[in-house]
Image (cartoon, rainbow, N blue to C red; front, side):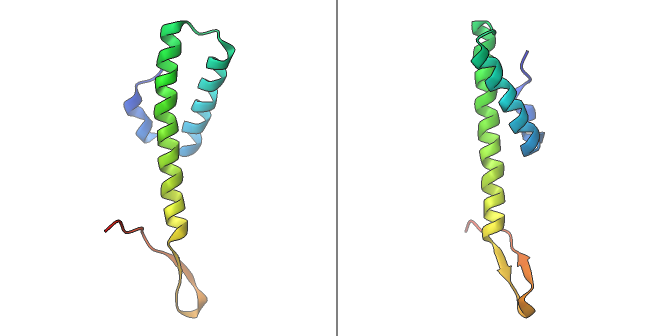
Length: 81
């Protein structure tokens, strides 16, 4: 059976994506019963949101790369003020 959605926050992007791909395979196979399919779909939606948030965070970090004195690159945290 699917894991609880609240453990998703602890997953790395790679682990969340791998689990999401496995869920997609299970759903596409049509082998899961209706209730199990609903649980898998809910977990998949939560994993998708988690992966999107991780990607957005990475993108914001990359966008904040700043070239300092001497041409040395550094990063600054994104500011949402």
